[in-house]
Length: 500
Image (cartoon, rainbow, N blue to C red; front, side):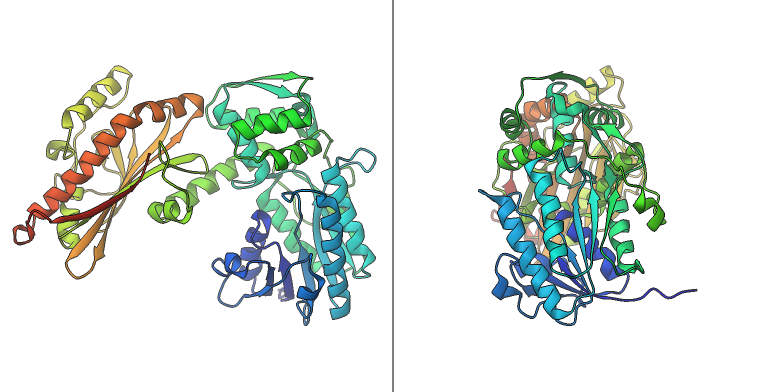
């Protein structure tokens, strides 16, 4: 069995979407990785202990002195599309500076991620991508350029744009570019190509066009995403939406800045399909099709969501409180916490007993009303109660919820099984706070399905705030009652929330 060669690698763009994924793949294979970053702190927190991070800016040639010393392969994954002004000129300067540094250091290969598109019909954005590859090749260092279309993966700019449009707009008046042919590639397949490019035996400069298994239109991508999310969507293409008008419209309806949106849309008007089959001959990779790529993106996001500590995710956004909670990806989070003068076991006791005959510690009549409405809609209501009145287990039904995660004296996560337009969860966490105190944290999450889901969430939010705020205070009161020696008027010490 042939042992895979380990390389000394310089990775640029490690803080980006593809770069971050590639960094993890390189580290998992045991390569020696050095990351170049304008803000090293952005990369250090996500890099493995053996990875080094150095400060440098491809637009500043002086900052690149020595960064390629001892490096065999450079991954070039930077661009200036989000910058104001002439981003193409910045891209040329950055590529020239890095190419010169790589040549001086004796780098053996540069692997560059560019964009698909016919040479004679390129937008400004795609033309810049091709020019960047040409500038890197002019350095004299052998370059392997991989040209790809849009990337399908949770977190990628293209995927988030598509998701936002489909989730929010039941009827979409769309520009004619939704009929443009493209060949989207799953992020897993793109990373596989980038990794495989390390081991190409021929040291000469090569250009490969890479894409998924199917050529589709942007309309088909949006409708497939809608199908997998259980949404009915109608798309009406009209010829009147220019790139500028389209980008301003996207700025109102999606998280994409108008400037980036305009440049992105300008590229979406061009066909981005694989016409050269060289990649199929050079690599053993057989990329997945559209349906599986979207399913993988949704599944990977669900997995990350399941293993993430939600309260940490909310606090790490740095976002201010807003009406309806904090948005992260497709989900809205509402986090509240109280510090109580009781140890974790006492603080968690009312949480593990919640629901069933024990009730929900405040405004139980509203819970019963919600259960009655759910029964009328064909749901489970509140009649299932609990299997065990004292201790839950993963998989147990709990009124209109089901236990999804349970850690004694630390965490209880419930997944909603009532009828609602989307998915919802409720999580309780307890942490020690000093020698005898605890923090009780309550996080409610909704993943709204389309516009109806958003209307549902924002419509019930006033009642939600009252119900869940009262429930948290009731839990804190029960926690104190579990330890009479701690009961005092100031036993509940402080509270905070991330809500509107």
